[in-house]
Length: 317
Image: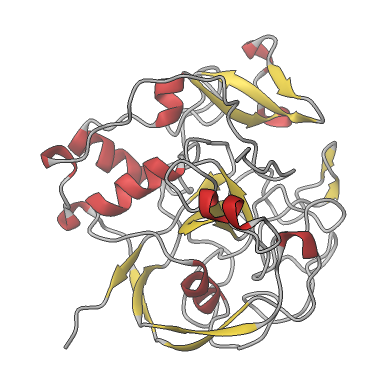
């Protein structure tokens, strides 16, 4: 199946070739002592998933349904660059962006000294920057990663490797939506139903202005915000929408696909589900910073607005 491309998450071309990912084993064995992120317990129960009022029906945001989920311990924010640095130091892990030698950077964030860069036809604001990685989000001519900000330029494969090392895992879609709603039930956003705007209401880090040309940064951020910033939701989780897209454990499948395509999407190497939107989302272009919104990308793809968050199963009492 050809990976489904979206406006939000640029995928690596199929022609790219890269050495095999790091082998999991002793070097990546769980090391919870190295994970310093704060956690909160999100109770289980009958979770709301989806919506009865889809904005992008082609993404199959609806219908609203109930799913039973178990209690989980959630890291309160996305994994930070500082936490990822500890992982790299402990294991010697090299991300797929580092092994490919490049990753996607938003055009306004590419340093002028980087020279000419290639873009994606129809999505020219995404530029292929050689040397862009989790440690150098804009490439080697830019600033190093900010320790308290979410780590970016991580693929699904990278996120899963970190989560396993940390003793946790990536959340499933129903778990993610349940946690994002913060106990409020059937709401559009983690804080309720009030839409963000470009002038007064800034509950999350998204684009303000004319995408992709002018970002007024009225919310205070031209790019990522610290992982722990703005107001948490009712469960104490920060930036569940906006800021960075978050990889989940699930494949990205659409029921409208033919059965053979759905089965293919569930196989290793096919598209994985992302939730939450990013600092580049805006209602005029990519209205995917809603809880029910969803998109997918290939598990080897990375970009400057994609990160992840780790959850931990609660031991049976």
